[in-house]
Image 1 (cartoon, rainbow, N blue to C red):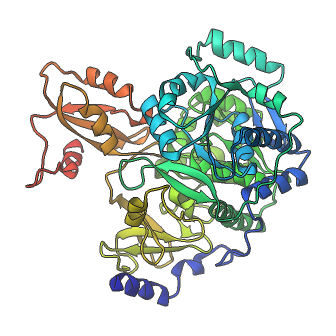
Image 2: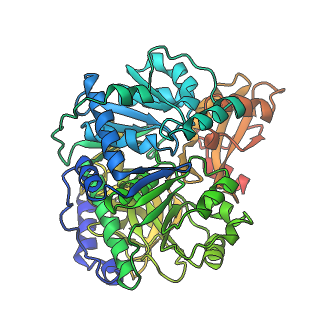
Length: 570
Protein backbone atom coordinates (compact mmCIF):
# COMPACT_ATOMS: atom_id res chain seq x y z
CA UNK A 1 0.00 0.00 0.00
CA UNK A 2 2.81 2.41 0.90
CA UNK A 3 4.40 1.66 -2.48
CA UNK A 4 1.19 2.61 -4.25
CA UNK A 5 0.87 5.86 -2.36
CA UNK A 6 4.55 6.68 -2.79
CA UNK A 7 4.24 6.05 -6.52
CA UNK A 8 1.17 8.22 -6.60
CA UNK A 9 3.00 11.07 -4.82
CA UNK A 10 5.92 10.77 -7.23
CA UNK A 11 3.60 11.06 -10.20
CA UNK A 12 1.76 14.09 -9.00
CA UNK A 13 4.69 15.92 -7.49
CA UNK A 14 5.85 16.60 -11.06
CA UNK A 15 3.73 18.76 -13.28
CA UNK A 16 1.04 16.93 -15.24
CA UNK A 17 2.75 16.90 -18.65
CA UNK A 18 -0.50 16.83 -20.62
CA UNK A 19 -1.64 20.27 -19.43
CA UNK A 20 1.04 21.99 -21.53
CA UNK A 21 -0.42 20.25 -24.61
CA UNK A 22 -4.02 21.29 -23.93
CA UNK A 23 -5.88 23.11 -26.71
CA UNK A 24 -6.30 26.87 -26.12
CA UNK A 25 -9.12 27.74 -23.74
CA UNK A 26 -9.50 24.27 -22.18
CA UNK A 27 -9.20 24.47 -18.37
CA UNK A 28 -7.29 21.91 -16.31
CA UNK A 29 -10.26 21.36 -14.00
CA UNK A 30 -14.01 21.14 -14.58
CA UNK A 31 -16.12 24.03 -13.38
CA UNK A 32 -19.50 23.13 -11.83
CA UNK A 33 -21.41 20.34 -13.57
CA UNK A 34 -24.27 22.75 -14.33
CA UNK A 35 -27.08 20.28 -13.55
CA UNK A 36 -28.04 18.17 -10.56
CA UNK A 37 -29.19 15.19 -12.64
CA UNK A 38 -29.62 13.91 -16.16
CA UNK A 39 -33.37 14.40 -15.68
CA UNK A 40 -32.77 18.12 -15.11
CA UNK A 41 -30.49 18.27 -18.17
CA UNK A 42 -33.27 16.77 -20.32
CA UNK A 43 -36.05 18.93 -18.88
CA UNK A 44 -34.18 22.24 -19.17
CA UNK A 45 -32.90 21.61 -22.69
CA UNK A 46 -36.24 20.32 -23.96
CA UNK A 47 -37.68 23.65 -22.83
CA UNK A 48 -34.76 25.70 -24.17
CA UNK A 49 -34.75 24.04 -27.61
CA UNK A 50 -38.47 23.14 -27.81
CA UNK A 51 -38.91 23.76 -31.57
CA UNK A 52 -35.70 22.07 -32.69
CA UNK A 53 -35.45 18.46 -33.86
CA UNK A 54 -33.90 16.22 -31.21
CA UNK A 55 -33.89 12.78 -32.89
CA UNK A 56 -34.74 11.56 -36.39
CA UNK A 57 -35.25 8.01 -37.62
CA UNK A 58 -36.46 6.65 -40.95
CA UNK A 59 -37.61 10.05 -42.13
CA UNK A 60 -39.55 10.97 -38.96
CA UNK A 61 -38.36 13.48 -36.35
CA UNK A 62 -39.08 14.15 -32.68
CA UNK A 63 -38.78 17.77 -31.57
CA UNK A 64 -37.49 18.60 -28.10
CA UNK A 65 -41.05 19.61 -27.15
CA UNK A 66 -42.36 16.21 -28.22
CA UNK A 67 -39.46 14.44 -26.48
CA UNK A 68 -40.33 16.22 -23.23
CA UNK A 69 -43.99 15.24 -23.52
CA UNK A 70 -43.36 11.58 -24.36
CA UNK A 71 -40.70 11.07 -21.68
CA UNK A 72 -42.95 12.74 -19.08
CA UNK A 73 -45.87 10.48 -19.96
CA UNK A 74 -43.89 7.24 -20.15
CA UNK A 75 -42.12 8.15 -16.89
CA UNK A 76 -45.48 8.78 -15.20
CA UNK A 77 -46.78 5.45 -16.51
CA UNK A 78 -43.79 3.61 -15.01
CA UNK A 79 -44.48 5.30 -11.67
CA UNK A 80 -48.15 4.25 -11.91
CA UNK A 81 -47.02 0.59 -11.90
CA UNK A 82 -45.69 1.10 -8.38
CA UNK A 83 -42.09 1.25 -9.55
CA UNK A 84 -40.09 3.57 -7.34
CA UNK A 85 -36.90 5.59 -7.29
CA UNK A 86 -33.85 3.40 -7.90
CA UNK A 87 -35.74 0.51 -9.51
CA UNK A 88 -33.97 -0.90 -12.56
CA UNK A 89 -35.69 -0.80 -15.95
CA UNK A 90 -34.09 -2.47 -18.99
CA UNK A 91 -34.06 -1.09 -22.55
CA UNK A 92 -33.53 -3.63 -25.35
CA UNK A 93 -33.82 -1.74 -28.63
CA UNK A 94 -31.74 -0.65 -31.60
CA UNK A 95 -31.46 3.02 -32.59
CA UNK A 96 -35.13 3.90 -33.07
CA UNK A 97 -37.04 6.89 -31.65
CA UNK A 98 -38.48 4.81 -28.80
CA UNK A 99 -34.98 4.21 -27.44
CA UNK A 100 -34.23 7.76 -26.20
CA UNK A 101 -37.90 8.16 -25.18
CA UNK A 102 -37.74 5.08 -22.92
CA UNK A 103 -34.25 5.93 -21.61
CA UNK A 104 -35.05 9.49 -20.58
CA UNK A 105 -38.49 8.53 -19.26
CA UNK A 106 -36.81 6.05 -16.89
CA UNK A 107 -34.31 8.69 -15.74
CA UNK A 108 -36.99 11.37 -15.26
CA UNK A 109 -38.99 8.91 -13.13
CA UNK A 110 -35.94 8.56 -10.85
CA UNK A 111 -35.18 5.01 -11.94
CA UNK A 112 -32.04 3.33 -13.28
CA UNK A 113 -31.56 2.34 -16.94
CA UNK A 114 -30.13 -1.09 -17.74
CA UNK A 115 -28.93 -1.03 -21.35
CA UNK A 116 -29.30 -4.39 -23.11
CA UNK A 117 -27.85 -5.43 -26.46
CA UNK A 118 -30.96 -6.46 -28.48
CA UNK A 119 -28.94 -9.19 -30.22
CA UNK A 120 -28.34 -11.09 -26.98
CA UNK A 121 -29.23 -14.75 -26.75
CA UNK A 122 -31.67 -15.89 -24.02
CA UNK A 123 -28.73 -17.03 -21.85
CA UNK A 124 -27.00 -13.63 -22.04
CA UNK A 125 -30.25 -11.72 -21.49
CA UNK A 126 -31.26 -13.86 -18.51
CA UNK A 127 -27.93 -13.19 -16.77
CA UNK A 128 -28.17 -9.43 -17.22
CA UNK A 129 -31.81 -9.17 -16.12
CA UNK A 130 -31.21 -11.40 -13.07
CA UNK A 131 -27.99 -9.66 -12.08
CA UNK A 132 -29.48 -6.16 -12.35
CA UNK A 133 -32.77 -7.12 -10.69
CA UNK A 134 -34.65 -5.28 -13.46
CA UNK A 135 -38.39 -4.96 -12.73
CA UNK A 136 -39.47 -3.81 -16.20
CA UNK A 137 -38.22 -4.11 -19.76
CA UNK A 138 -38.80 -2.17 -23.00
CA UNK A 139 -38.18 -4.35 -26.06
CA UNK A 140 -38.62 -4.10 -29.82
CA UNK A 141 -40.99 -6.86 -31.02
CA UNK A 142 -38.25 -8.29 -33.27
CA UNK A 143 -36.52 -9.53 -30.09
CA UNK A 144 -39.56 -10.40 -27.97
CA UNK A 145 -39.11 -14.13 -28.63
CA UNK A 146 -35.75 -13.95 -26.82
CA UNK A 147 -37.39 -12.21 -23.85
CA UNK A 148 -40.02 -14.95 -23.75
CA UNK A 149 -37.30 -17.59 -23.30
CA UNK A 150 -35.48 -15.72 -20.52
CA UNK A 151 -38.32 -14.07 -18.61
CA UNK A 152 -39.48 -16.79 -16.19
CA UNK A 153 -36.10 -16.90 -14.43
CA UNK A 154 -35.92 -13.14 -13.79
CA UNK A 155 -37.60 -10.50 -11.57
CA UNK A 156 -39.10 -8.67 -14.56
CA UNK A 157 -42.81 -8.03 -13.88
CA UNK A 158 -43.62 -5.62 -16.72
CA UNK A 159 -42.72 -5.97 -20.41
CA UNK A 160 -43.43 -3.15 -22.85
CA UNK A 161 -43.26 -4.27 -26.49
CA UNK A 162 -42.80 -1.70 -29.24
CA UNK A 163 -42.86 -2.00 -33.04
CA UNK A 164 -40.53 -0.36 -35.56
CA UNK A 165 -43.35 1.92 -36.70
CA UNK A 166 -44.78 3.03 -33.34
CA UNK A 167 -43.51 6.62 -33.52
CA UNK A 168 -43.43 6.99 -37.31
CA UNK A 169 -47.01 8.25 -37.79
CA UNK A 170 -48.92 6.92 -40.80
CA UNK A 171 -45.67 5.70 -42.33
CA UNK A 172 -45.39 3.37 -39.33
CA UNK A 173 -48.13 1.08 -40.68
CA UNK A 174 -46.16 0.54 -43.88
CA UNK A 175 -42.90 0.02 -41.97
CA UNK A 176 -44.54 -2.55 -39.68
CA UNK A 177 -46.06 -4.41 -42.63
CA UNK A 178 -42.67 -4.62 -44.39
CA UNK A 179 -40.81 -5.65 -41.22
CA UNK A 180 -43.35 -8.31 -40.25
CA UNK A 181 -44.73 -9.67 -43.53
CA UNK A 182 -42.21 -8.89 -46.25
CA UNK A 183 -38.87 -9.18 -44.44
CA UNK A 184 -40.28 -11.57 -41.81
CA UNK A 185 -38.10 -10.01 -39.11
CA UNK A 186 -40.46 -10.66 -36.18
CA UNK A 187 -40.29 -14.28 -34.93
CA UNK A 188 -43.46 -15.53 -33.19
CA UNK A 189 -43.54 -14.87 -29.46
CA UNK A 190 -45.95 -15.34 -26.58
CA UNK A 191 -45.86 -12.70 -23.82
CA UNK A 192 -49.50 -12.62 -22.62
CA UNK A 193 -48.94 -9.91 -19.97
CA UNK A 194 -46.93 -7.58 -22.21
CA UNK A 195 -48.19 -4.05 -22.88
CA UNK A 196 -47.81 -2.30 -26.23
CA UNK A 197 -45.83 0.95 -26.39
CA UNK A 198 -48.79 2.71 -28.01
CA UNK A 199 -50.98 1.43 -25.18
CA UNK A 200 -48.59 3.06 -22.70
CA UNK A 201 -48.88 6.35 -24.57
CA UNK A 202 -52.69 6.26 -24.57
CA UNK A 203 -52.95 5.20 -20.90
CA UNK A 204 -50.55 7.94 -19.77
CA UNK A 205 -52.29 10.85 -21.48
CA UNK A 206 -53.74 12.22 -18.24
CA UNK A 207 -50.98 11.02 -15.87
CA UNK A 208 -48.67 13.33 -13.97
CA UNK A 209 -44.98 12.62 -13.51
CA UNK A 210 -44.06 12.88 -9.83
CA UNK A 211 -40.77 14.68 -9.50
CA UNK A 212 -38.25 12.29 -8.01
CA UNK A 213 -35.61 13.95 -5.78
CA UNK A 214 -32.57 12.76 -7.76
CA UNK A 215 -29.13 13.30 -6.25
CA UNK A 216 -25.93 13.43 -8.29
CA UNK A 217 -24.69 10.23 -6.63
CA UNK A 218 -27.83 8.29 -7.55
CA UNK A 219 -27.37 5.52 -10.11
CA UNK A 220 -28.39 6.56 -13.63
CA UNK A 221 -27.21 3.51 -15.62
CA UNK A 222 -25.99 -0.02 -15.06
CA UNK A 223 -23.71 -0.40 -18.04
CA UNK A 224 -22.81 -4.06 -18.46
CA UNK A 225 -19.26 -5.01 -19.31
CA UNK A 226 -16.92 -7.91 -18.77
CA UNK A 227 -14.55 -5.71 -16.76
CA UNK A 228 -11.33 -7.68 -16.26
CA UNK A 229 -12.93 -11.13 -16.20
CA UNK A 230 -15.49 -12.97 -18.26
CA UNK A 231 -18.46 -12.46 -15.94
CA UNK A 232 -20.66 -9.69 -17.28
CA UNK A 233 -20.89 -7.02 -14.55
CA UNK A 234 -22.85 -3.80 -14.29
CA UNK A 235 -20.62 -0.73 -14.12
CA UNK A 236 -22.46 1.70 -11.83
CA UNK A 237 -22.67 5.06 -13.60
CA UNK A 238 -24.12 7.86 -11.49
CA UNK A 239 -25.79 11.05 -12.70
CA UNK A 240 -22.59 12.86 -11.64
CA UNK A 241 -20.36 10.48 -13.68
CA UNK A 242 -22.26 11.18 -16.89
CA UNK A 243 -22.75 14.89 -16.25
CA UNK A 244 -19.00 15.17 -15.66
CA UNK A 245 -18.14 13.34 -18.89
CA UNK A 246 -20.63 15.46 -20.80
CA UNK A 247 -18.99 18.61 -19.39
CA UNK A 248 -15.48 17.31 -20.16
CA UNK A 249 -16.39 16.61 -23.80
CA UNK A 250 -18.14 20.00 -24.11
CA UNK A 251 -15.02 21.88 -22.97
CA UNK A 252 -12.91 19.89 -25.42
CA UNK A 253 -15.34 20.62 -28.27
CA UNK A 254 -15.47 24.34 -27.46
CA UNK A 255 -11.78 24.64 -28.37
CA UNK A 256 -12.55 23.65 -31.97
CA UNK A 257 -14.80 26.63 -32.45
CA UNK A 258 -12.20 29.21 -31.44
CA UNK A 259 -11.13 29.25 -35.10
CA UNK A 260 -14.11 27.56 -36.79
CA UNK A 261 -17.68 28.77 -37.08
CA UNK A 262 -19.96 26.84 -34.75
CA UNK A 263 -23.07 25.51 -36.56
CA UNK A 264 -26.28 27.00 -35.21
CA UNK A 265 -27.65 23.48 -34.67
CA UNK A 266 -25.16 20.66 -34.27
CA UNK A 267 -26.13 17.62 -36.36
CA UNK A 268 -24.90 14.28 -34.99
CA UNK A 269 -24.73 10.95 -36.84
CA UNK A 270 -25.77 8.21 -34.41
CA UNK A 271 -24.75 4.96 -36.09
CA UNK A 272 -23.23 3.32 -33.02
CA UNK A 273 -25.84 1.54 -30.89
CA UNK A 274 -27.30 3.61 -28.06
CA UNK A 275 -26.90 0.69 -25.66
CA UNK A 276 -23.11 1.17 -26.09
CA UNK A 277 -21.63 3.77 -23.73
CA UNK A 278 -19.82 5.65 -26.55
CA UNK A 279 -23.05 6.52 -28.40
CA UNK A 280 -25.02 7.02 -25.19
CA UNK A 281 -22.69 9.80 -24.00
CA UNK A 282 -21.16 11.27 -27.16
CA UNK A 283 -24.35 11.16 -29.26
CA UNK A 284 -27.41 11.14 -27.04
CA UNK A 285 -26.34 13.13 -23.96
CA UNK A 286 -24.08 15.54 -25.88
CA UNK A 287 -26.82 16.05 -28.46
CA UNK A 288 -29.35 17.04 -25.80
CA UNK A 289 -26.82 19.17 -23.90
CA UNK A 290 -26.11 21.19 -27.07
CA UNK A 291 -29.66 21.26 -28.44
CA UNK A 292 -28.34 19.13 -31.28
CA UNK A 293 -30.09 16.84 -33.74
CA UNK A 294 -29.22 13.11 -33.77
CA UNK A 295 -29.84 11.06 -36.90
CA UNK A 296 -30.51 7.54 -35.58
CA UNK A 297 -29.31 4.69 -37.78
CA UNK A 298 -31.18 1.51 -36.82
CA UNK A 299 -29.03 -0.84 -38.87
CA UNK A 300 -25.54 0.54 -39.66
CA UNK A 301 -24.58 -2.80 -41.22
CA UNK A 302 -26.82 -1.87 -44.16
CA UNK A 303 -24.12 0.39 -45.59
CA UNK A 304 -26.01 1.32 -48.81
CA UNK A 305 -29.06 2.30 -46.70
CA UNK A 306 -26.84 4.22 -44.28
CA UNK A 307 -25.15 6.14 -47.12
CA UNK A 308 -28.57 7.00 -48.55
CA UNK A 309 -29.64 8.43 -45.15
CA UNK A 310 -26.43 10.46 -44.97
CA UNK A 311 -27.07 11.95 -48.41
CA UNK A 312 -30.16 13.76 -47.04
CA UNK A 313 -28.39 15.13 -43.97
CA UNK A 314 -25.77 17.77 -43.16
CA UNK A 315 -23.61 16.06 -40.52
CA UNK A 316 -21.30 17.98 -38.19
CA UNK A 317 -20.37 15.39 -35.54
CA UNK A 318 -19.71 11.76 -36.43
CA UNK A 319 -18.56 9.34 -33.69
CA UNK A 320 -17.81 5.84 -35.00
CA UNK A 321 -15.42 2.91 -34.77
CA UNK A 322 -12.71 1.78 -37.17
CA UNK A 323 -14.80 -1.00 -38.77
CA UNK A 324 -17.61 1.43 -39.62
CA UNK A 325 -15.27 4.05 -41.09
CA UNK A 326 -13.69 1.29 -43.18
CA UNK A 327 -17.04 -0.12 -44.38
CA UNK A 328 -18.18 3.34 -45.49
CA UNK A 329 -14.92 3.97 -47.35
CA UNK A 330 -15.43 0.70 -49.24
CA UNK A 331 -18.83 1.87 -50.52
CA UNK A 332 -18.55 3.63 -53.89
CA UNK A 333 -21.50 5.95 -53.22
CA UNK A 334 -19.98 7.20 -49.96
CA UNK A 335 -17.18 8.92 -51.86
CA UNK A 336 -19.81 10.92 -53.81
CA UNK A 337 -21.31 12.50 -50.66
CA UNK A 338 -20.62 16.14 -49.84
CA UNK A 339 -19.27 15.90 -46.28
CA UNK A 340 -17.71 19.36 -46.18
CA UNK A 341 -20.01 20.15 -43.23
CA UNK A 342 -18.18 17.69 -40.93
CA UNK A 343 -16.53 19.43 -37.99
CA UNK A 344 -15.73 16.55 -35.63
CA UNK A 345 -15.13 12.92 -36.47
CA UNK A 346 -14.37 10.89 -33.36
CA UNK A 347 -12.99 7.35 -33.34
CA UNK A 348 -13.27 5.13 -30.27
CA UNK A 349 -14.30 1.66 -29.10
CA UNK A 350 -11.27 0.08 -30.79
CA UNK A 351 -8.02 1.33 -32.30
CA UNK A 352 -8.37 3.43 -35.42
CA UNK A 353 -5.96 2.05 -38.01
CA UNK A 354 -3.67 4.57 -39.69
CA UNK A 355 -4.52 3.45 -43.29
CA UNK A 356 -8.24 3.91 -42.52
CA UNK A 357 -7.64 7.31 -40.92
CA UNK A 358 -5.59 8.48 -43.89
CA UNK A 359 -8.15 7.27 -46.45
CA UNK A 360 -10.95 8.92 -44.44
CA UNK A 361 -9.11 12.26 -44.47
CA UNK A 362 -8.50 11.97 -48.22
CA UNK A 363 -12.13 11.14 -49.02
CA UNK A 364 -13.96 13.46 -46.58
CA UNK A 365 -11.46 16.24 -45.95
CA UNK A 366 -11.83 15.75 -42.17
CA UNK A 367 -9.44 13.92 -39.86
CA UNK A 368 -10.54 11.23 -37.42
CA UNK A 369 -9.79 12.26 -33.86
CA UNK A 370 -9.06 9.21 -31.72
CA UNK A 371 -10.07 8.98 -28.08
CA UNK A 372 -10.13 6.32 -25.39
CA UNK A 373 -12.45 5.20 -22.67
CA UNK A 374 -14.35 2.33 -21.14
CA UNK A 375 -17.82 1.62 -19.79
CA UNK A 376 -16.28 2.19 -16.35
CA UNK A 377 -15.24 5.75 -17.30
CA UNK A 378 -18.56 6.94 -18.78
CA UNK A 379 -16.61 6.53 -21.28
CA UNK A 380 -14.21 9.31 -22.34
CA UNK A 381 -10.92 9.40 -20.40
CA UNK A 382 -8.50 10.72 -23.03
CA UNK A 383 -8.88 12.29 -26.45
CA UNK A 384 -6.70 13.96 -29.05
CA UNK A 385 -7.21 17.69 -29.63
CA UNK A 386 -10.22 17.90 -31.93
CA UNK A 387 -9.69 19.32 -35.38
CA UNK A 388 -5.98 18.49 -35.49
CA UNK A 389 -4.54 18.16 -38.96
CA UNK A 390 -2.84 14.77 -38.68
CA UNK A 391 -3.38 11.33 -37.21
CA UNK A 392 -1.36 10.99 -34.01
CA UNK A 393 -1.64 7.23 -33.50
CA UNK A 394 -2.14 7.89 -29.78
CA UNK A 395 -5.26 8.01 -27.59
CA UNK A 396 -4.56 11.66 -26.81
CA UNK A 397 -4.55 13.63 -23.55
CA UNK A 398 -6.53 13.19 -20.32
CA UNK A 399 -9.68 15.35 -20.39
CA UNK A 400 -10.12 18.07 -17.69
CA UNK A 401 -10.12 16.93 -14.03
CA UNK A 402 -8.73 13.56 -15.13
CA UNK A 403 -5.43 11.98 -14.10
CA UNK A 404 -3.80 9.21 -16.09
CA UNK A 405 -0.97 7.30 -14.40
CA UNK A 406 1.08 4.47 -15.90
CA UNK A 407 1.77 1.88 -13.19
CA UNK A 408 3.62 -1.40 -12.77
CA UNK A 409 2.13 -4.59 -11.32
CA UNK A 410 2.90 -3.42 -7.77
CA UNK A 411 1.02 -0.14 -8.25
CA UNK A 412 4.13 2.06 -8.57
CA UNK A 413 4.08 4.97 -11.02
CA UNK A 414 6.44 4.53 -13.95
CA UNK A 415 8.53 7.26 -15.63
CA UNK A 416 7.39 8.81 -18.90
CA UNK A 417 8.07 6.51 -21.84
CA UNK A 418 7.89 3.27 -19.83
CA UNK A 419 5.14 0.74 -20.54
CA UNK A 420 2.73 -0.16 -17.74
CA UNK A 421 -0.99 -0.38 -17.00
CA UNK A 422 -3.04 2.70 -17.85
CA UNK A 423 -4.81 3.85 -14.66
CA UNK A 424 -7.47 6.57 -14.66
CA UNK A 425 -8.90 8.82 -11.96
CA UNK A 426 -11.57 11.47 -12.45
CA UNK A 427 -15.20 12.42 -11.81
CA UNK A 428 -16.33 10.21 -14.73
CA UNK A 429 -14.92 7.02 -13.16
CA UNK A 430 -17.56 4.63 -11.79
CA UNK A 431 -17.87 4.07 -8.02
CA UNK A 432 -17.75 0.30 -8.67
CA UNK A 433 -19.51 -2.74 -10.09
CA UNK A 434 -23.12 -3.50 -9.16
CA UNK A 435 -23.19 -5.80 -6.10
CA UNK A 436 -19.65 -7.08 -6.75
CA UNK A 437 -17.30 -5.58 -4.14
CA UNK A 438 -14.74 -8.32 -4.90
CA UNK A 439 -14.56 -7.34 -8.58
CA UNK A 440 -14.54 -3.63 -7.69
CA UNK A 441 -11.57 -4.19 -5.38
CA UNK A 442 -9.61 -5.78 -8.24
CA UNK A 443 -9.85 -2.69 -10.44
CA UNK A 444 -9.90 0.28 -8.04
CA UNK A 445 -6.65 1.32 -6.32
CA UNK A 446 -6.57 2.67 -2.73
CA UNK A 447 -5.96 6.18 -4.12
CA UNK A 448 -8.97 6.10 -6.43
CA UNK A 449 -7.54 5.06 -9.80
CA UNK A 450 -9.34 2.62 -12.10
CA UNK A 451 -7.02 -0.03 -13.51
CA UNK A 452 -7.96 -0.28 -17.18
CA UNK A 453 -6.19 -3.54 -18.02
CA UNK A 454 -4.68 -1.80 -21.07
CA UNK A 455 -0.93 -1.42 -21.34
CA UNK A 456 0.65 1.76 -22.65
CA UNK A 457 3.08 4.59 -22.05
CA UNK A 458 2.86 8.37 -21.81
CA UNK A 459 5.27 10.58 -23.76
CA UNK A 460 6.80 13.83 -22.53
CA UNK A 461 3.93 15.85 -24.06
CA UNK A 462 1.34 13.89 -22.05
CA UNK A 463 0.01 11.79 -24.98
CA UNK A 464 -0.65 8.13 -24.18
CA UNK A 465 -0.16 5.25 -26.59
CA UNK A 466 -1.70 1.82 -26.05
CA UNK A 467 0.68 -1.00 -26.88
CA UNK A 468 -1.14 -4.11 -25.66
CA UNK A 469 -3.73 -5.48 -23.30
CA UNK A 470 -2.84 -6.94 -19.95
CA UNK A 471 -5.93 -9.06 -19.89
CA UNK A 472 -7.00 -11.77 -22.31
CA UNK A 473 -9.98 -9.77 -23.46
CA UNK A 474 -10.67 -9.81 -27.21
CA UNK A 475 -11.88 -6.59 -28.83
CA UNK A 476 -14.28 -7.30 -31.72
CA UNK A 477 -15.54 -4.16 -33.49
CA UNK A 478 -15.36 -2.20 -30.25
CA UNK A 479 -17.11 -4.84 -28.12
CA UNK A 480 -15.38 -6.67 -25.27
CA UNK A 481 -15.35 -10.44 -25.66
CA UNK A 482 -14.06 -12.59 -22.81
CA UNK A 483 -12.40 -15.96 -23.51
CA UNK A 484 -13.88 -17.49 -20.32
CA UNK A 485 -17.40 -17.00 -21.62
CA UNK A 486 -16.65 -18.50 -25.05
CA UNK A 487 -14.85 -21.44 -23.48
CA UNK A 488 -17.65 -22.13 -21.01
CA UNK A 489 -20.21 -22.30 -23.84
CA UNK A 490 -18.04 -24.40 -26.18
CA UNK A 491 -16.97 -26.78 -23.40
CA UNK A 492 -20.62 -27.71 -22.85
CA UNK A 493 -20.63 -29.48 -26.25
CA UNK A 494 -20.42 -33.24 -25.55
CA UNK A 495 -17.79 -33.61 -28.29
CA UNK A 496 -15.34 -31.16 -26.68
CA UNK A 497 -12.72 -32.38 -24.24
CA UNK A 498 -11.20 -28.94 -23.57
CA UNK A 499 -10.86 -25.65 -25.38
CA UNK A 500 -9.35 -22.18 -25.22
CA UNK A 501 -10.26 -18.92 -26.99
CA UNK A 502 -7.91 -16.14 -28.06
CA UNK A 503 -8.12 -13.02 -30.18
CA UNK A 504 -6.49 -12.98 -33.61
CA UNK A 505 -6.00 -9.97 -35.92
CA UNK A 506 -8.89 -9.39 -38.32
CA UNK A 507 -8.93 -6.84 -41.15
CA UNK A 508 -12.63 -6.18 -40.73
CA UNK A 509 -13.25 -6.18 -36.96
CA UNK A 510 -9.79 -5.48 -35.55
CA UNK A 511 -9.78 -8.83 -33.78
CA UNK A 512 -11.79 -12.03 -34.13
CA UNK A 513 -12.29 -15.02 -31.84
CA UNK A 514 -10.24 -18.13 -32.56
CA UNK A 515 -11.14 -21.27 -30.62
CA UNK A 516 -8.63 -24.08 -30.12
CA UNK A 517 -10.29 -27.41 -29.33
CA UNK A 518 -9.20 -30.84 -28.16
CA UNK A 519 -11.85 -33.33 -29.32
CA UNK A 520 -13.60 -35.89 -27.16
CA UNK A 521 -15.62 -37.05 -30.16
CA UNK A 522 -13.35 -37.66 -33.19
CA UNK A 523 -16.26 -36.89 -35.55
CA UNK A 524 -16.76 -33.35 -34.17
CA UNK A 525 -16.51 -30.70 -36.93
CA UNK A 526 -15.92 -26.95 -36.78
CA UNK A 527 -19.39 -26.44 -38.27
CA UNK A 528 -21.01 -28.52 -35.49
CA UNK A 529 -19.31 -26.37 -32.90
CA UNK A 530 -20.19 -23.09 -34.65
CA UNK A 531 -23.88 -24.04 -34.69
CA UNK A 532 -23.72 -25.02 -31.03
CA UNK A 533 -22.07 -21.72 -29.97
CA UNK A 534 -24.59 -19.69 -32.00
CA UNK A 535 -27.38 -20.80 -29.65
CA UNK A 536 -25.74 -19.17 -26.63
CA UNK A 537 -23.50 -16.41 -27.96
CA UNK A 538 -24.46 -13.26 -29.82
CA UNK A 539 -22.86 -12.83 -33.23
CA UNK A 540 -19.70 -10.88 -32.38
CA UNK A 541 -18.75 -13.34 -29.61
CA UNK A 542 -18.94 -16.45 -31.81
CA UNK A 543 -15.68 -18.15 -32.85
CA UNK A 544 -14.80 -17.04 -36.36
CA UNK A 545 -11.94 -19.55 -36.55
CA UNK A 546 -11.86 -23.02 -35.01
CA UNK A 547 -8.73 -25.19 -34.93
CA UNK A 548 -8.32 -28.68 -33.51
CA UNK A 549 -5.23 -29.68 -31.50
CA UNK A 550 -4.24 -32.93 -29.81
CA UNK A 551 -3.43 -30.99 -26.63
CA UNK A 552 -3.44 -27.39 -25.34
CA UNK A 553 -0.24 -25.72 -24.05
CA UNK A 554 -0.28 -25.52 -20.23
CA UNK A 555 1.78 -24.39 -17.24
CA UNK A 556 3.19 -26.88 -14.74
CA UNK A 557 0.04 -26.51 -12.66
CA UNK A 558 -2.20 -27.14 -15.66
CA UNK A 559 -3.28 -23.57 -16.51
CA UNK A 560 -3.88 -23.10 -20.24
CA UNK A 561 -1.32 -20.75 -21.77
CA UNK A 562 -3.35 -18.45 -24.00
CA UNK A 563 -0.26 -16.45 -24.92
CA UNK A 564 1.23 -19.59 -26.54
CA UNK A 565 -1.99 -20.06 -28.51
CA UNK A 566 -1.81 -16.42 -29.62
CA UNK A 567 1.72 -17.05 -30.91
CA UNK A 568 0.45 -20.15 -32.72
CA UNK A 569 -2.40 -18.12 -34.24
CA UNK A 570 -0.09 -15.40 -35.51
